[in-house]
Image 1 (cartoon, rainbow, N blue to C red):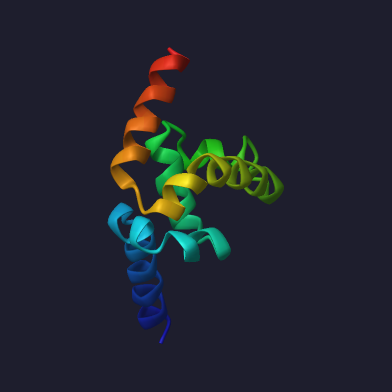
Image 2 (cartoon, rainbow, N blue to C red; image 1 turned 30 degrees about the horizontal axis):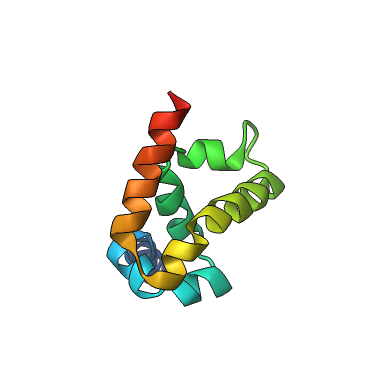
Length: 97
């Protein structure tokens, strides 16, 4: 049974981390964000999953970073604008250099 649960978990992670799915379900992502979705959005900004959790894996650091990522992504998620999001991420990464 454990193997089945792990397969289901892995399938959810794949589904919720897919940018096409994220932007097709933007309102739901904002209402009930899945960690995989937040990590995918953060990765577009150049932020790794390790950075999202902080140096010691603190959940409150992830929560704080999740709020920041979602606040940047919110207008793009509401509009279902994946192309705009990717352009915004590239713009922000260029500014950070």
